[in-house]
Amino acid sequence: MAKDTMIGVDLAKNSFQVHGATMGGHVKFRRKLSRAQFLSFMAAQPPAIVVMEACAGAHHWARELMALGHEAKLIAPIYVKPFVKRQKNDAADAEAIVEAAQRPEMRFVEPKGIEQQARALLFRTREQLVHQRTELVNALRSYLYEFGYALPIGIASLRRIEAIIEDQDADLPDMVREICRDLRQQIAEKTVRIDALMKRIKSTAEDTETARRLQTMPGVGPVTSLAIEAFAPPLESFQCGRDFAAWLGLVPRQNSTGGKQRLGRVTKAGQADIRRLLIVGAMSRLTWLGRKSIREGSWLARMLERKPKMLVAIALANKMARAIWAMLTRNEDYRDPLPVAAS
Image (cartoon, rainbow, N blue to C red):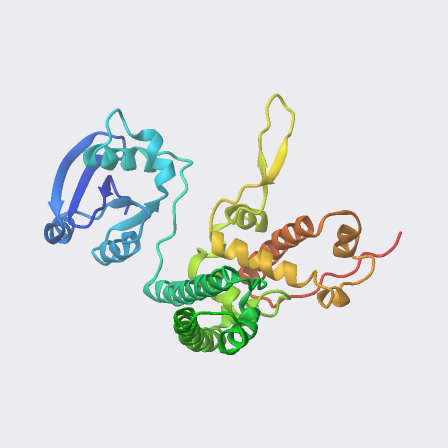
């Protein structure tokens, strides 16, 4: 049955502004509700299309509203902003959400399931610990640099750092040694937690068919496959692989006018984690060891002959994104492209 009402909800922690309108845009009601009143009010409404801005709590509320019989849609805040009239307030935001959602060409964010959000939390927790460990390593390097010890960037320098700290001939005050040992202990604790989460990620990736299939592609490992499962919407929502690559921000930014096409750097729009991991995976194929698997005369080999390495990595990441779309929409494992016959 077609729904004749659209309700825009401006979410907050404890205050919810709702704006109900017909599909033609005529206002039916405006209400300000508390967190406790929101669900009971929505339960009393006939089935409607409920639209919210995509934010931290929006996926939870989308699931709750769908359980009440409503059709929940999420919209990116950047698409709502042009429809806000004059002064910005909760009522104006809720009205703008409805007006933006009623545009026939509007794009929406797919609500996430609870398991998908759980996998995203697993990924985010590991990323946070890696960033914290990197911060501690950089702090150690900077402290030792003040006493004349220059060390290279990266986790691999930890052994050299530990040797300097424990070297009794090193010109380091006792207080500095104690501080550095404490930081070294914190780094060790972070590493243990990161390794435990990595084992959890690998086991999670082995339990799902999608993650297993994704890992048949060179350059895609458990972390990348988990990120795609956790953050990407159903790939059937994209019409083609290029649409998925564009969603990831792996296509050139356009600044075209007057019939003249001007293409610049990649847009970097969409999901940054998947884009970053695909580029890292592409770079792994361009190392001296990874290049051994590149066929002579292939597209990748020809690109490497005439283009900078980073540009080739981004182009390869774009191809990987398109291939991922094809694999998941067709339920097929990765297949190496056949070499083009010489003419």
